[in-house]
Length: 257
Length: 325
Image (cartoon, rainbow over all chains, first blue to last red; front, side, top):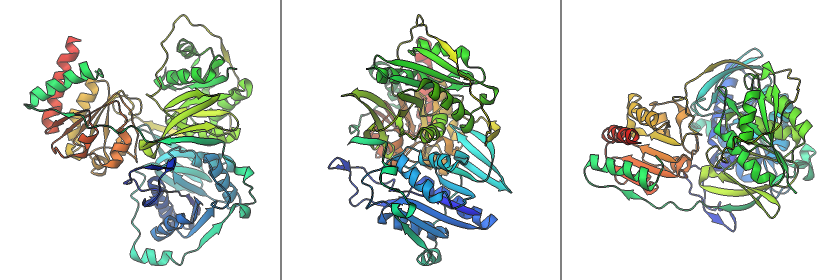
C-alpha cells in the first residue's frame, strides 16, 4: 500500500501561550507532532506492517519541522517530505496548505492518506477534507477504527459520542480521532535508523506553484488572550452547609440554575 | 448595503439543533439589512422550515431527497451546492458540529473560498465581517476576516445567543431540486452511546469527572447530577486514559472544547490541557479533595472534599431547589 500521512508541527500542549508583537510568542516553546497526527502516523505504520507498502509523512512548514518528521521516521515511517514555504509565503491559511498538499499528492497514487482530525493550534480541522476534495477522493473524519480488506474500507467514526460505521473504497482520506490507537514512542534503534531515512525537501517551485496560486483567502487581524480568570471562592464550613451554600450561589448569584 | 446570507439548519433526530437558531442570529448580524435564507437538507424537513423563520430567517430553501435521510459528505455537498448555485449568497454559515466540521471544508474547497471555523462571535466592523475564534484550544483567540470570495464560517454552539422567537414572522419556503448521486461513503450502522441525548458541545451544564472518580461506576453519581440538571457528563484525559469512560467524553486540548453555562469539575486536578478545554465556561465549580489542586485557580466556587460525599449531597440539594421552582 502506498500510504501518506499529513503531519503538522505544533506547540506542546503543556505550553502556556503568550503574545509578543501581536503574534503568538514562539520563543523557547517546545514543539511536538500535533497529537491527532500522531494517531495518524501510528495507524499508517500498523497498516504498512499488516498490508505491506510504504509510509510517507508530509508536512508544509519550515526547516524547524524537520525534527517532527524525524520523530515520525523514528516511530517507523519510511520516508518524509518537507514542503518548505519559508522563503515563498509570508502567511497562509487552510486553503493554502490544502492546495500545496494536494499539488504534491496528485501524482503519487496514494491508496490511503491519513491526517489528524484537527490541529491543536489553529484548530480548524479543514485541511484533510479539503485535500480529499482537491484530489477527488472520498474522506471520513474523526475515525476511531479502520479496517481495510481488498479495496473495501470500513471505518468507525465518532459523531459527537455516537459511532457510525462507514464503508467506502480506496483511495480514501481519513482523519484520526483520539482512541484510534496508542501511538508508540520512538525506540532507540528507531531513532538511529531515522537519521538515515530519506527526508526530501521541496519548495513551491518544485510543485509548479506560484505564491498567487496559494494566496490565503482569510486574514488574522488580531490575536489576544482571554481575560485571566481570577480564582473564586473556596467555601468553608460543614460539608452539607457548603453544598447548600453552593446551590444557593449558583441559583441566586451566578443565576445558572 | 446588506448581504444575502444562507444558514444551514441542522436537523438531528427530527428536530432542529439549537445551533441552527444561533446561526440565524449570526446571519442577521452579517446580513444587516440584507436577507437571511435558511437551508434545510434531508428526507422530510420541510415542516421545520417555519421554525427557522420564526427564529429570524426571512425565508427558507429546502432540498428533500431520500438519499439525504442520513448525512454523507457527498450527498449533503451536492444538495448544498445546488442551493448555493441558485441563491448565490455572499455569506454561508454552518454550526461547528460534527456535521458542520465534516461538510464545511469540502464546500469551501468546491467554492475555492476561505473558511473561518469555530467562530464564537461575529461583528461587522468598518464594513468587514470579523469573526472571533479560539486558537490553541481557547488559550488564545484570534479575530479573522475573509479577504477573497464568499464569507464562510462555522459557528460554535452555545456562544452566539439566538434571537427571540417571533411566531408572527412569515416567509416563503421553496424547494430546490438537486441530483444526489455517486455517494462514495455508505453509513452501515449508527451506535448511539451519547449520554442521555444531551450533546457535550451543546450542553448548558456539564458534570465532568477526573481520576478522582476512580472507576467506571464512579461516574454514576455524576451522571445522576447531569441528568437532574439536563446536562451532559464529560471527563478529563486522566479518566479516559484510566478507562473509566469513553474518549468521546474527553474535554481538553485533545478532546472537546466546551463553553457551558455551568461546569462542575469533580475529582479533576486541572492540568493545563484540561483547562484549555473548559476554562471559558461561564461558571466553574470545582470539587476536589486536594485544596492545592490547580482546578481551584479557575473555579468560581470550590468545595474541598470527597466528590463521593459532595455530589450526592448536591443531587439532594438541587432536587429540593427544583421542587420549589
